[in-house]
Amino acid sequence: MNPAEEIKQLFPGSVVSTGIQTNKPLAIIKKEDLLIIAEKVKEMGFDNLSLITGIDYRDRFEIIYNFFSYAKKQNLVLKVILDHNNPEIDSLESHWKVADWLERETYDLVGIKFRGHPNLKRILLPDGWIGHPLRKDYDMTVDQFVTIGEDGEDIVSTDGSNLLRR
Amino acid sequence: MKTEELLINMGPVHPSTHGVLRFKLIMDGEIIKKCDIVMGYLHRGTEKLGEMKTYLQFVPYTDRLDYISAFPNNYAYVKAVEELAGIEVPLRAEYIRVLTLELNRVVNHLVMLGSLLLDLGASTMIMYGFRERENALQLFEMLCGARMTFNYIRPGGVREDLPEGFMPKLNEFIKDMEYRIDDYEQLISGNEIFMMRMKNIGVLSAKEAISYGMTGPSLRGHGVNYDIRKVEPYSVYPDLDFRACVRNECDSFARYMVRIDEMRESLHILRQVVDSMPEGKPTSQAKYGIAPMTGAPTAVSTYFPRIFTPPPGEVYSRIEAPKGELGFYVVSDGTIKPYRIKIRSPSFCNLTAIPKMVEGLMIPDLIAAFGTIDVVLGDVDR
Image 1 (cartoon, chains in turn purple, cyan):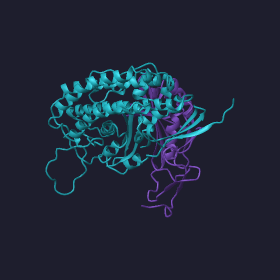
Image 2: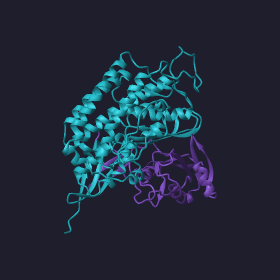
Image 3: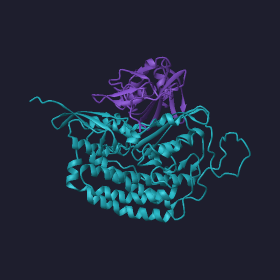
Image 4: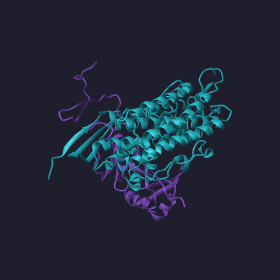
């Protein structure tokens, strides 16, 4: 049976809708029940979490989880819709270790907070970077300059007038 | 006896980190107690750039992700766009694509072997590897004029047909490579020093490797028979005869052996592609969703339209790149530019496993384990 339908049968209250995303079964779920469903998904044999990403739709955020099962050779896509003002969701780090970095990347670039993540800080951009670049309202006209402080930490500022220019 | 812990920075500029990557190692004597990875030194914001380009304009940016093997990057992105837009590709184009993909896989593994051995202190292999790689790069140059950043695979097909005199040179390369691989095996695989450096180093159980998101040849060294070319066949792979190379030892040596086996399989595929290359056009001639033209139409072009608008929707499409599962998540809002592009890069996810893998080992072992994971920093940082 289609794994998305299976989840809907098990958790009728937490699945908003099911469908197909280009050959892959898709289930849109409520954000409160992500952890319970994730546990079930892992039990169903989806041992590979291949992708986490967040998309900014200006009025809402969508988080996409792509799972794959090595035993059953099946795909499953979970989607969670988040509020635009304070996007926050539970972390899946305890179930899939790869979620650690994928969630940090999503936090870094899209600005979605993951509750219960052991080390939620920026991964690609330096600490102290202003804004999250993959948001649609990110201001690209402001230059940001990164210098190295006394203890080797990154210092970000928008004022580059005292930097050496070639 | 209680000893003081020492924090050592390895990198960002270190010859064996293959680019700019920093390991923050907490050492107890010579033993690594904790390994933190700091990255982002090569972050160029490729995903954000993609939102500002048309679908075709983004293809050259994908070359710069994993610059050792750029054809798979081109193809993974183009495949996602084609699935999104429903573009049919002529059979000849698919064969040319598979030819470039497999040739690039050989090149990638040659670089990986060379740099791995160089990091371990043996400089012969990198000379051998780069000698053969040069022949392959000349083939790429014939094909598209570039040696590393190709911009060759495009939505609807490939940029140009195979040039004259390409096939004989390719046949020569395949014949040459065959006994070269035997040479490498004689040189490396049985070498006692090499085996002592690689066997039982960087061990991770299959279950852990899956949890850490490892894919590709690195995962197949852990006994997991998973090859996207087999599991979710794309392009013309279903018509070709090959096997997924798997080793069960779960250590660095197994991950190295998978690469050697894969090169042989790639040559096997290449030979079949050469034999069954069909005739036809290398680009789709369909008039797909062309944006309304302004001004008088010029001469009839044989190219696929440069500007097209896929219907709104989202797609996640992945391929078996030489380093692992390379996926592109592309969202279209029905305009000429993608709304969002997310790159799931194999190097980034494979690197997750390193801290766990090297716990309790020494720094030279970290280099050995890291070399067999085969990471390119352009792919990690994007």
